[in-house]
Amino acid sequence: MAGLQARYGDQREYLQAVREVLESIEDVYNRHPEFEDARIIERLVEPDRIFTFKVTWVDDNGKIQVNTGYRVQFNNAIGPYKGGLRFHPSVNLSILKFLGFEQIFKNSLTTLPMGGAKGGSDFNPKGKSDSEIMRFCQAFMLELWRNIGPDMDVPAGDIGVGGREIGFLNGMYKKLTRKHQGVLTGKGLAYGGSLVRPEATGYGAVYFLEHMLHYHENKLDIKGKKVAISGFGNVAWGACEKATQLGATVVAISGPDGAIYNPEGMTQEKLDYMLELRASNNDVVAPFADKFPDSKFLPGKKAWDVKCDIAMTCAFQNEMTGADAKELVGNGTWCCVEVSNMGCTPEAIETFQKAGIMFAPGKAVNAGGVATSGLEMTQNAMHISWTAKEVDEKLHSIMNSIHEACVKYGKQPDGYINYVKGANVAGFMKVAEAMLEQGVI
Ligand code: 2IT
Image (cartoon, rainbow, N blue to C red; front, side, top):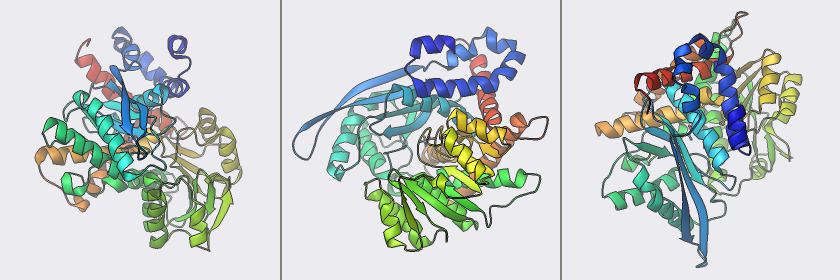
């Protein structure tokens, strides 16, 4: 850590993500001198390579715009590089290195053969027209295409990159290579996408939550529980829908402008409206309360200001602070599942763990998204498509395996499951073994 701190002192998110993993794996690392001999940690914390490129495009007013594009290929010990692209003004190397690093362990947990990568741009999709989005995506792919491939590196979506963007990116890749290959996941159904991929991150998170609850000594059930969910993007929507289907009451959602208090829970109409809000590209949730009078807009508030049994972070890294966590615990919340990547600060995680409440980290909880991307890759390689039922069953069994792996490596002597430790150790062991067996490369 000291070495990384000296070299990358300004990469706060990256250092945070690495520190969490290293703290978790310290015990097992010390029990395996062969890891130390092979300098596994030193080799793992440094990305295999990073591409940085200029993306120039012309906006609707004929003005030339310049953005920076990135792809961080972190580790391909267990399979081709795999991970999303994020288009957001906050994107920088620290954020993409943290996301790429987390992706290694997450992808390892899925049981599928995928390495870790992440990419994106500081491009802000907010307020852009469809043609501007298309021109940006085309310009982005014009640079990226040489460095990706179905057996090399398979990007997907993340914040700011959904079905529309994947379509434009795939179109350009196809034009440049003259090959229709499964080089991106999250594709539309008409050109090689997988059923259930759009819902998979949110659904998978709720399946994981169900396993956590059932595993509890009192065999808890999600039915009848009050759930607060931050965010109103793709992931939050999937989580809201599945939690509602399973009988939970989603009492809060939130956006950058504030929270929605929703005591009666979700209806199909409300879930559909979440998608509409997101598509409007305005980053606000306030109109939800105008449309549904049984809900109330709480300006500037977070979803955590609403009393709930279970909190699910579905928005952004470090969205849950130590103070938020204390407020939740004080209000009687007894479970928190991190769905956004690194959604909780180290202080928040410590607060939950010290209070002895159930907590699981994003790299386990949200792995259903990339797992279903893996299933999309399989279907593309086989030139077939599975039914929604087939994909959903596979997703179920993957989330079950991830939960089991967390319990195996995270069970403490007093019976408390440290899911952070469990996920990090389980994810790490497979990667470390794959690196050991393949020599110094
Ligand atoms: O954070 C993530 O796991 C994703 N954005 C999805 C990555 C993928 O390749 O589907």
